[in-house]
Length: 138
Image (cartoon, rainbow, N blue to C red; front, top):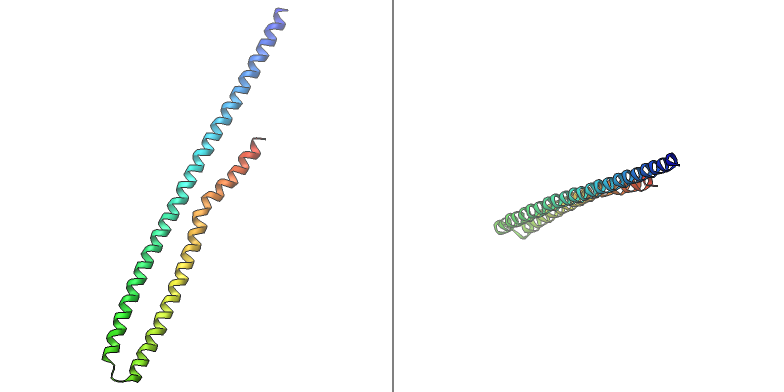
């Protein structure tokens, strides 16, 4: 009888120990997963912040360049010798301004497209990891 009690106690202790180890492992994995998720959020925010900083710098540079081009065109207008020359200067300025504007729009569009893809990537990776984590817990 003593052997039976000892055997049952040992089996119970082993089961309790195994359950505790599994629980501890799950808690550790969940904690690591949460840390990696926070790291992904930080990485995403960092990419987004740098992208917006670049966009802001580009916008200021474009505005400064457009202003300088406008001042140069105004000086040309003032030195025009005829109405025909004013129209030619205006036409040249308008074409140049539109070309520069469209180039800036394309550049900004590409920047924000890349910014979105790059800032969302760490989050997408975490979603995939969450799916794997959930599957592993089954």
